[in-house]
Image (cartoon, rainbow, N blue to C red; front, side):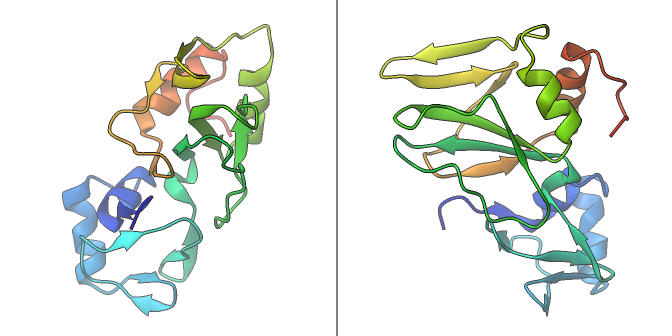
Length: 164
């Protein structure tokens, strides 16, 4: 399943605790994935999957995702919640895309007054954006943005750490 992340990682990125801590939410039957109760921490979550905690929808980390876009892959993301692209790549480029739930932060990061450092590789491939790298992501794969990465982006955009 290209692009999938483990549900315990997804829930931890949503700010619900560490990966180990969120296993308790799974064991007690409080989490559903696409309408079915999910109690296995290794279950994979894909773009478009609906994750609920106590009947309430969760977006990826309630913050956003880091996405490895392949060349000519359209930047269309079917995902619960609205995600806003930060400095989207051109149609033939590839590499890291940041998709954020916080529209204000996404707009601020696109403002030339707050330039994001981007590292480009060969063949129009963006390797890093705003200090966030592709890491082990293969083309088409994604991961929730980590809270520390989000805080670093907020500092760079001169926004308070917890504003939304």
